[in-house]
Length: 376
Image (cartoon, rainbow, N blue to C red; front, side, top):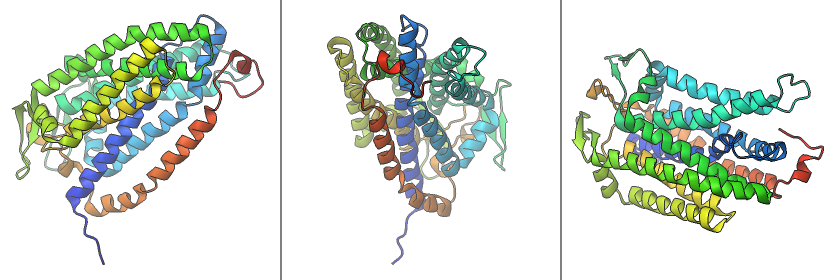
């Protein structure tokens, strides 16, 4: 018996997977968040060494998830990839550059032949820690605010600005999400370091820094959510595909989809609980509550952008050039074939969890840093 799977179902299925990967990526960017403290948090070289090694043991998880996220997006919604990378290439090049120098830093920082010393590579890690999350947040914000492109009958992209994506930096709403993501991953990074490193003096510094970074995160995030929910959204007609600007569109999407609403509210509650545990209780488990909240909140934001008669990549220059799931997706055959391949994802996640648990069996100490094992 042949099972018929509609094209619309496959498009929704792949947007679900992309949303999940996006949530996991934001959580795993605690590595970038921790790197942004590489100069301000440690009081001595030993503490800096512990921080770098705690993060160095996890940076490949983040990098792999970023590549998987990009690959899944390209394969399932190629028109988005062609439009965004074909027009807004400077912002994507800046993001990729920041991750390339991160890989270089971890690879060569402690090599015996390193003639530059550790300072140069620590600077690379610091740049990636600030630039990567901020620019990713700005890029994702354009899913709600729109980008300056038009498509012709052959889907050839014309970008209206010579800045090719960097013009997103002058939109205040985009900056709000960029800063919210930056301070979120800084909070996650501090929580992870608290969970991983056994050093009382460093733990005290972490708790103070956590309180200082939690406030701007909440301010920027809540401001972004208020702007998109109370402002105009890009509604795509389910029948004609015509895109129009409709006030409170994202608010109606949120209120009208119980799954999205539960993910969003539940995730926010878990993140707030993690902040209370980390700041006021000094709990090492705060990172797990924060991660369990971050993933569903990011998924909910992607659901708002993609589901519910919405253009997930809107054009502010020409509304009908905006991309919807139906317009941007691969063929039904391609999506169905990839769906079968995607069934191995749970096994990959299980392996990652096993590897993570094996690496984190013991907390990092200064005695371990004086040993002869592999060091970053």
